[in-house]
Image (cartoon, rainbow, N blue to C red):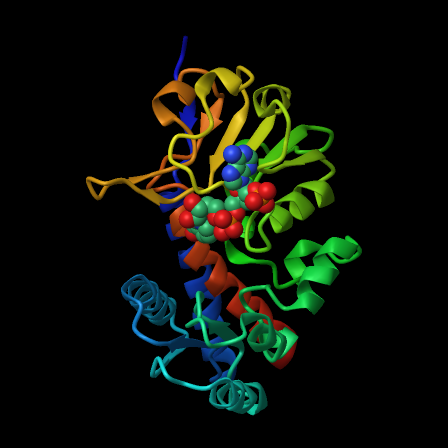
Length: 290
Ligand code: NAP
């Protein structure tokens, strides 16, 4: 049995960042303006600190104005909302991202609601989620959550024609499962969203031409569930006790059966920040021309 084609998220993300860098350089040369990405981090969660630092670094690499606002863990809701109001009012700020999770005393939904939807580069504001669900606007013109957007770009790199294909998304989170399902639906796939109450998940997955796993359980999707030749997008990032990262799909099994598959690490992960930069550019163009 031939092995599945590996979908190289690292290379595809690097190519996307180069395209963005070229466009940003063109905008700067023509207008002297550059897109501005502002990331707000509350507290000192070590994982969040690392994520924010890589967002900052990659935004600088593509020539954007990149600012991280590091606020103390005891920041109040009112202080955070005031910071967001300040960023909303600043015309040079194109993208605002509040790094999640927030400390427990803060109300995440209210914080996301307070971000100007035109600057919501995480695509989590209810207005942006509603526009995506409405299906009337092309996703390229929307601010769509970054990991789902990245997953779709990986999928399209191996399957240019998605129309009519059976897609099964495992997971229904606001951040990943739901928006991925909306994007697949908009691409005319027949979409099933599976979750923890789904009965006989193996046979649901077995009918899929496309499987997107966003569960948060290492090796949860078994190779024998996968239809031969299917395309598998593994969104999961799980840390094993030995420190290694692994996905939601039992990779060694699935690679023998799938037609194409994303590795973890090096699959969906690198696409997330590249899509954040893409959203920042989309927001800049919609707000300030370019
Ligand atoms: P989440 O909010 O915890 O959602 C997990 C989903 O999986 C839920 O909808 C849950 O169903 C479903 N689920 C749990 N157990 C299940 C089971 N036994 N059978 C079927 N479905 C089950 O997680 P998330 O934020 O969507 O993230 C999912 C994974 O993606 C995690 O590993 C996360 O680290 C990773 N992730 C990666 C990136 C990236 O950049 N690559 C970004 C974000 C997340 P219920 O709704 O019924 O509980």
